[in-house]
Image (tube, one colour):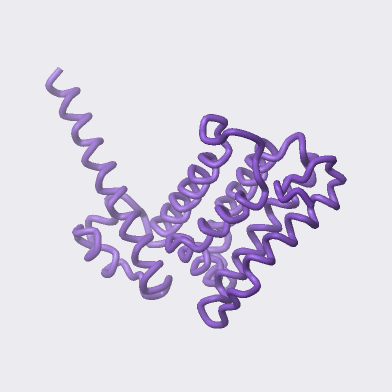
Length: 211
């Protein structure tokens, strides 16, 4: 019994260390960028020696990919909360959904995705390791969209909407740090919601706008 408790405690300590390293990696990439997030920077933020990192991760890339996966899981948990029946009183309002998606994409943790996607353009190993994470994220987002918008939108239209919104709001989030255009932001959401109403041929507007 004592040995079992000891093993469980060791596993818990290991899990806590991994969680601290992943969180420190997310914070470091978000604040100082992918190239600035060295193992020394990460270990300092986590309060864990650089050498101890290699007891849990074989390389910096392994740690970075673990951080990317954690950001993915956080996004999906946040998106799932929006569509839970107990968290809403009626059908999904597309305008409200887009506002929430935009807010999540502008969250500071999403800067990790931007940093890693840009770095992966020229780093083949990182690109290869990130591809399944990105693919899984988009697949999960698309399925959430199907669940949220059915039957107002057909499944293929819901998937198209989901990925289109992500790419649009990603670009908006990147540009707004250098060239913000707040006067277009609200009208963009309203007009896109109306466009999808018309494209889908919905008898009732998905946007909840009544138009």
